[in-house]
Amino acid sequence: MLRLLAPALLLVAGVACAQEAPEQVLERAVAAHGSGDLEGAIRGYRLYLKARPEAIDARSNLGAALAGTGRYTEAIVEYREALKRSPGNFSISLNMALAYYKAEQIARAARELAGLHKQQPGNRQVVLLLGDCWLRQGEDAKVIELLTPVERQDQDDLGVAYMLGSALLRDKQVELGQRILDRILRHGDSAEARLLLGTAKLNALEYPEALADLRKAAELNPHLPDVYSYLGRAEMDSGDMAAARAAFEKELAQNPVEFESNLNLAVLLKQDQDYAGARKLLDRALLVRPGDLRVLYQVGSIELAEGKLEQARATFESVLKQAPQFVEAHISLATVYYRLKRKGDGDRERALVQKLKAEQDAKDQHGKAE
Image (cartoon, rainbow, N blue to C red; front, side):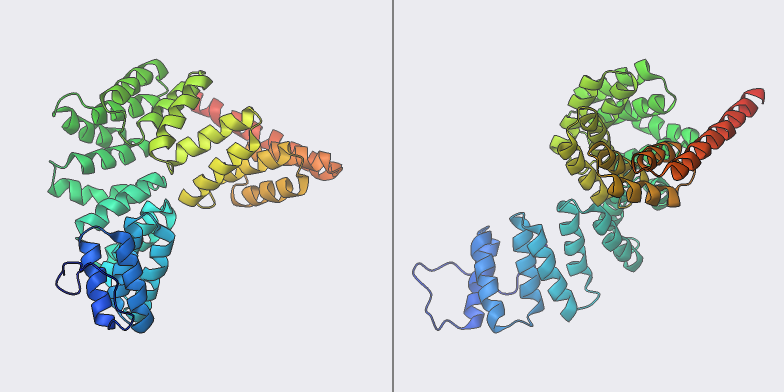
């Protein structure tokens, strides 16, 4: 978001005088920025800020120019400096949130946007960005709460309907999700409609039907966010790991921070013993959902496979502290204990596994009886 601080001036050929006044330097920076010369603008703003470090707008403009060149980390530094001098400045805070978003730091972007939403609940840009961040983080209940009133007010916005429908289906609210889906379907066959249909069928474990819809969605719009992620999951659940890997790679090629693709492709790479490649993907997944237990479990599994037993022990113990019913983590921790020659601890974990499995079997039998 560029805020021009002075009338744009035509650039004059020649080298600026060494004694050029700060205001002239600023004018040249603003003019360069307005004409698309971002590197020239960055140099000018930085030179001006040496003389006027307290200039909030110039520092914000520097952040915008840096973000425009893809240097989001540097832009965030400048936005933070500007906010020190202008706390609560909505425009600067929004630009900083956008920089986090574009830098693929989705969790941090979501925190910043949530604060902005409290300041301006009706700001459409903030609502849509926050909804997208929460959807990526798997915060389906938050997406539903955020977007339901928006969708009621504007039922023609298919983007809102798609995000809300996705969250409802993932939250197993099939009836409400179907209502949103029907509205999209009334606009004719589309990639969005096919993706929602495929998602619903995937959740119902109808793999052949899900694959048909998801493949059609990818055919209609190969750039639709999440389409290859869901297709990869359907291929994976159907047993075609090569097709699943290809789908996840396509998703990440256009959306490097899609959580499920990072996690599932990491699992496939781990199976191929490409531990370095898998760990890179898991680290990226943790940027989107810090502390996610499924990701941490996979991290522990890699540490175990690499023989890093103490690291694996600490990881699995941390997972189980938060999720004591996580059977696979108990099994893996038992393996670690046995390899560490801690037979008593290993036996205890094996007993817990047997107990948890027996409890699950009893629940399953009770469910069938009903």
